[in-house]
Each structure stands twice: as C-alpha cells, then as structure tokens.
Image (cartoon, rainbow, N blue to C red; front, top):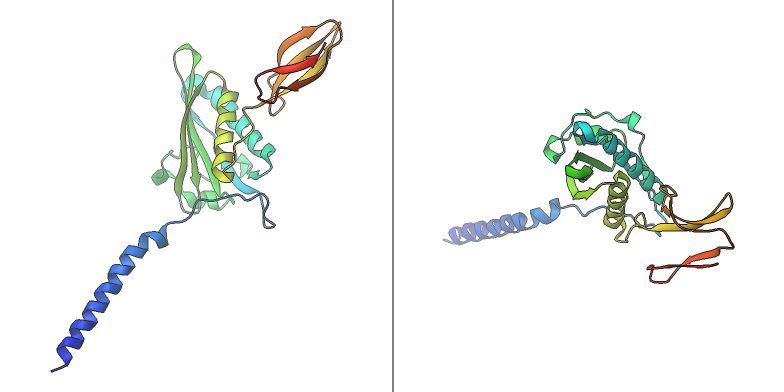
Length: 226
C-alpha cells in the first residue's frame, strides 16, 4: 500500500528537477561578453579580423579606406592583434547576418572578433556605414552601429572607439587630436593631427616666434606662446 505514494513522490521530485533544469538552461548556455583586461598578468592582444567592407559602386574607395584606417587604429591601440586579410578563408561575398556567416572559417584563422560592414554614399557625398562586430566563438553579433559622415577616416575612428569601449569599458582616443608646431619656409604653423598622426589641418600661422602649444584642460582651446 505504500508503493503508490512513493511513486507519486518520485514523480514529483523528477518534475521539480526537470523544471529547475529548464530554468537554469538559459543561464548555462549564455556566454559572457569578451573583456580585455590590460592590467591582467594573463593579458594577450585579442585576434580581430576586419573583413573587406561591402559597398555600392561609388563608395568602394571609401569602404576600402574605412577598413584600412580601422585596422590601423586597432593595431595602434595595442590591445588587438589585427589579422592579415591574406589569411582569410571565408567567402568574400559572405553576408552580414550571423546566420549567413561561417564562423568556423574565421576561427580557423585564429579570429576571436570579426568586423564586417557595408558602406553607401548618399546625397551631398555623405557616407553611411553599417558596422557590425561579431564574437566568433559563440557565433553572435556583439555590436552594431550605423555611422554617417562625409569622411571615411571619421567613420573609422568612431567605430574604433566603439570597439575599444566594448572590449575594455573605457573610452577610445581616436576621435581626439594632437596639436603640434610645424616649421615651414618663413613661418611656423600650428597644426592639428588625427590621433594616428594623419590628416593635418593648419589652424594658425605666425611669421614670428610661436612655441609651447598645449590644450586647455577642458580641451576647448589651445594655448601657445607667440
């Protein structure tokens, strides 16, 4: 007479265990986002692949420049190992959705992060870039941005900062500028450069003494001696 309650009790416990397993399954399957801890004794640069960006006909040159500048920025950051595009095994026509990407081909070349994108040119020369970051091991999209600017370099710098923010939780520096003096014939020029040392813009010129340029602490003005 005691077997029926025992069976019911066993079924009850089995049901509870099954329910608990279902509740815990999403947490077990969920993988934490990748994080780069520069101060860790186990720090190593994260291998990242920047795939050739797709582009409409009149935006191909801009797309190539965005990919080139972005790769350079990530290399300068010192926390990424930017993989050589010549090593890529994936189909160049591969799509931009996670379901369209063969992640095993990217993991085979050592990539842990994958950047893809598409660039188009709108009215007035304005560029629009759809930029994606994928985490290769879990095979998922980690970051998506739509960036607009007439300058390919500006788009590349913005997305480089986004990637640094994603992986380190710290702001990037590629939208900042360097100020320097440049000696030219008969004068000195105060010049702004992008953070990577390119794109010089002359903002002041003196035929007499000019020295010691420095940013004001809030970054709103440049002070110099003249």
